[in-house]
Length: 280
Image 1: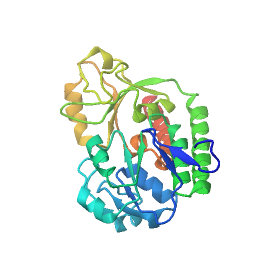
Image 2 (image 1 turned 60 degrees about the vertical axis):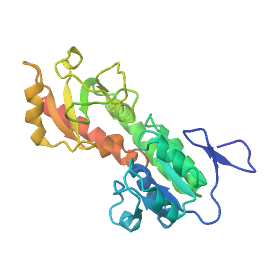
Image 3 (image 1 turned 45 degrees about the vertical axis):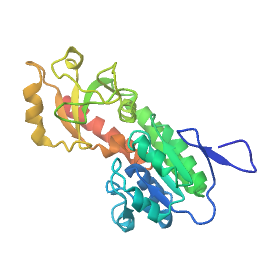
């Protein structure tokens, strides 16, 4: 938010300042987790468009028109909806699509959370732009409480290295400068590989960097991993390497926004459960 009390505005991840919305507000969300956040802020009557991947909150979100996918947006349909605001994310929405939308949408709100703490600014930016400051502060308080509890409880456990898989053929993981990796870090899990040439690198399961891994976590998204994939994974692991293989709910590691509050609870419980299993 700027220091000008006469005309408050909130700066997004692209450096664009957005004043408080006035008059008729029509929002299109091209990011599933941000759609969920908009509903959590009580803005359901202002959301006019969303992607087919925006499935939460279940039930209420169904009344909102679909405008394609996060990377395959129906530009003409969005134009017909006449949005005043479109909310996007650097990782999830192609730059070319965002630039095209900017030619006719008054406000494109760009997000790019990397640290879990970035949710605090996200809550306040959306709350400020869309007139839901009080509700935003409730989310901030709930998030900060869960964050403090997570740090306190997880400090009792030793740090471990984990391999977090998001794709198969090739096997792909996450670098440490991603939101996913930093969420896992909060519960004492350091993702591999430590150095990475991209944010979502391919990984050599027979490489030296993964030999000391304690757990391999198979995410339920974006690839829909299931227990049926355990055998495929074990077949490619080096002889003598027997890490614990577990499925992990990808929505609780990668969805920022209001989901992050519940995610901290989920990850605490998940880490404790795996620690108990490993000790037996």
